[in-house]
Amino acid sequence: VRPAGLDLDELVVTVDGALSSGTPQATHAFDVAPGTTTLRVALTGSEDGGSDFDLYLRQGAPPTAAAYDCRDLGPNQFGYCEIAAPAA
Image (cartoon, rainbow, N blue to C red):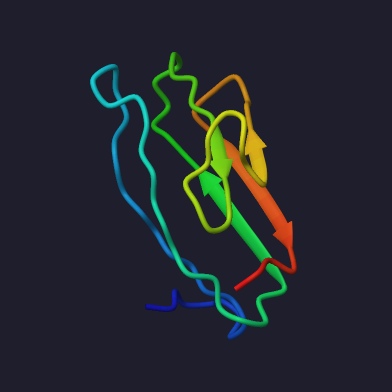
């Protein structure tokens, strides 16, 4: 589904999930279309004031703290990665 007002060359995919002390991490896989010029991935969380999540991206395999293509280790529940000309 393409949200109203979105450029025809943009696609937004939403993944919902929840992290907690019992589920401290989650991994989500997705396909990148050939010819994609920019991949932007954002992590957002509720405004609880105490959460500190990190975002890791890796092409072709699940990321780890030691193996990733992009990461955001911000001090809160938000993260952002941008990759120019990502591999399909």
